[in-house]
Amino acid sequence: MLRLLALLLLLPAPAAAQLADLRPEGRAELYAATRAGGDADYLALRSRARVGLTAGYDSGELYVESEWTYDALTDAVRVDLRRAHLDVFFDAVDLRIGRQELIWGQADGAFVTDVLMPLDFSEFLAQDIEDIRLGVVAARATAYLGDAVLDAVWIPRTPASVLPGPRSPWYPLPETVLGIPVVIGDPARPDPTLGNSEVAARLTWQGLPRTDVALLGLYAAGRLPTFRKQLTFEIPNPTDSTPAGLAFTATPVYERRALAGLTFETTLADPVVLRGEAAFEFGALLDEVLPADSAALVQGVQDGTLQTSIEQGFLTERSGFQAALVAERAFGSQTVRLQGLVRHVFDHDERLAVDAWEGAATAIWVGRFRRDLLTLRLFATVETTGSYWINPQLDYALRDALTLRLGGQVFGGPQPDDATVLAGLRRAQRLSFATYDANDLVFVQAIYGF
Image (cartoon, rainbow, N blue to C red; front, side, top):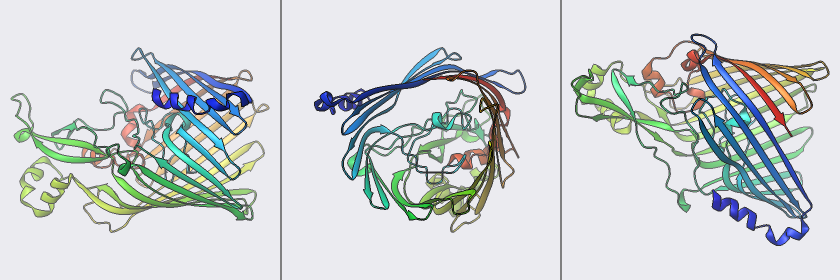
């Protein structure tokens, strides 16, 4: 990372005499979150400072953003380089090289076509979306072709999302499944070679009346892992009731797949703004259903189908489809946004741990009062499984640059069993919100921006 920063600092050096301006920006925040029930123990207690610096030149810009976080629960300090990229502007083409944002999706609380950036799931989705999205080291070229804009992206090395550790209250995996201990194996990431680099492209058409349409495609590894679940035999512990010394080794696998997508935004239905996106994923790895109990697993190894599933890690390859449609309308100082999300797996059979069709509905209401000093926001989503997530939030601008934020996170729904949790951790959307029912929380946040 230091080498990347040094490279970006050296690249614009010849143009130092053409420096136009230097623009600092940043924010500092204090954040505390406690469980809404039980002993009201802290789920988070931290301070964070983020500073960005833009150096503008006649033909480009250099942007560097760093972040310092102090976690009072672990007494740890973390320093991250969130962004560090160089922009070079030509007549019809812009180039950006370095750690950057690549936000291509438009859905709320879901990632349909927004799949290029790694994500921070150390607190699941109970963070600001700008904190969840992490930077990706890439080279991007943007060409302006009349009414069309073409983005081409090359990612030299697959980035991985941040997952919570076993001691975190947000750790989603059970300790045992079917009475068998779960052991997490070493992640299987693509080797950092030129042949394993990733490519993506997006073509946006702006020639239609009051409508933008974009086609996109990519060949890249998943930012969240699939877990290959394999039976291993270990020396039995006399004090352990595990049958025959069995263990489940769940190995995080970042599979490479191709995806084709479409996004659009239109104001033709004014005063309603419509947005949508759809993606077709070719040959993704999906989880298979685990046997009902450990005895069936041990006794059923002679079954050919089960034996194949064991050898493949209870994963099978299927293509899938996702789509989201968003309708937004403003009513004076209030805004309402409604969203529908649907997922479909082709060639579905009873072996898969996910349904052939899944869906979710999301609603967001935002109201601004007292000359925009007070902002109320309510986010709610519910899935066809009955799993739900509710996030109320209140912002009050104490001063121009100082905001006090109060809110909560509520998760619930039918409780999945351990086998379902382990089998359904392929994507964030497939992890039931009910898994975090015990993590309902209230939080307070003070934000100072400059």
